[in-house]
Image 1: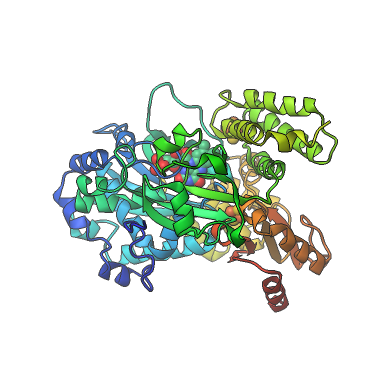
Image 2: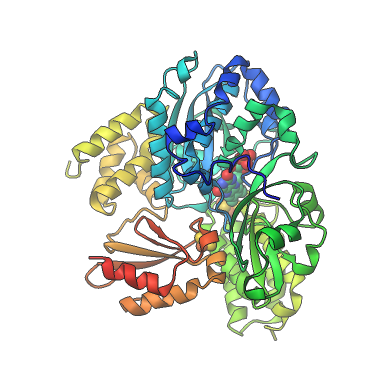
Length: 414
Length: 157
Ligand SMILES: Cc1cc2nc3c(=O)[nH]c(=O)nc-3n(C[C@H](O)[C@H](O)[C@H](O)COP(=O)(O)O)c2cc1C
Ligand code: SF4
Ligand code: FES
């Protein structure tokens, strides 16, 4: 079931060191890269069907095409290494075991975008990983792999690592750019039509670490090779994660379209201590929960999860066994969202706090049926009325958990 | 001007200026440098930074106060951050927190009188697969057990 494209070098000793990385194929895509035109590279990625692996699953090629070409202003690539979605810990595996794969991906992607400076925005807590990545960047500069002339070719590229400082919302792409501009991490209003992001008024593309790390394989082997994995609409592979009550938590690379229950059984070795699965959050805490009896027939791709009323998200699954009481889970999630709301939009700032308070009251035994009704009506207020999709995620949590585990919630109220 | 970067940070700051289209971007990197220099970020340092970035102290304060990792008050020498989010909770973070609280005789959100330890509850550290996770200053402890906590705290001077 395991298919190693991005994770090919993860088990090689010292694979993060430039010399070892090179011996194991890193930067080998660059010869082919520079034999192609920028436009050809962009088309290759577009035809590969590569989809963003940061949670949204947007087509990468489509996004890159939004950048004006030619552009009077410089274009920037911004790599999202903010990784803060609960249940998600995949990008850090790339940063830890194969930072040069990310740098190689940045070179390929920047070239396709006519960009000459790329920023990597890494979450503030990832100090160990930031240090490791900075060492890799320094090595690459020293070896002439980046800088004035990439490997002697007529192409200049700088890469700068930028540390965040503890704010989940800075993972949202426009908040990330605001933060990179030295401001509070407030998401921006979305334009009517599709546009790139704007970094100090210059066009910019924001992509997840894993998305960028998928690019060298496509450049080197062609779009058809990438499409040999996965499904028609979800091509390729992804680093899926399992955490919570699973026997073997961790990150595993598999192709899209594999069976979810088989993945849990065969790779995760089932539920911890032989207990029964009760519920699963398929892709980071922001997506709707699934009951154990709903996962039959689900395959791990965007389409299947959508058809089953949830979402693939970041691929970071959180598994819960039969001992878990769902109202406790919802309280835990509300605390997270309450703490992390950026506070710009009234429905989000007030609504998430209110939900948290109500859930606390209900769990303390002072709740009434009316409180649950209020909670359900808050879901309406949170959905579709805010600047970013943070608040709607909380609405999905309210609806899916209360809807699917009704008895547990109603058992708490008078 | 009372507050100043030390020489190393001043050099770093000048180097970074060349790496961004506008100097506004240096707000976060510079706040980090201030915090590494002093252990926290005082008002004088924010005024100093405002001058450097041609902006107002209020702007700097507004940015600094948005990010939870910037300390606008002094904190303990060792900041023990316990992840309280779902995957860690499912694997026993509550017990780990209680163990640390009992050992140090303070609650989460408090510091010991000698300012050696602070306990903070934090949200997902991106270490859900090796939960429960605790981060002491900048070092992650993964698959944490009470015994590991005891050994580490015993070793902290
Ligand atoms: C609240 C919120 C948090 C997000 N956090 C992250 C994150 O930590 N990392 C990430 O890559 N994308 C995150 N995203 C998605 C980004 O906005 C963006 O879609 C993504 O980085 C684009 O890259 P991709 O197309 O390569 O996936 C988040 C989105 C939202 C709404
Ligand atoms: S929905 Fe919430 S997190 Fe998103 S911009 Fe509005 S207040 Fe901020
Ligand atoms: S939930 Fe604790 S590290 Fe993710």
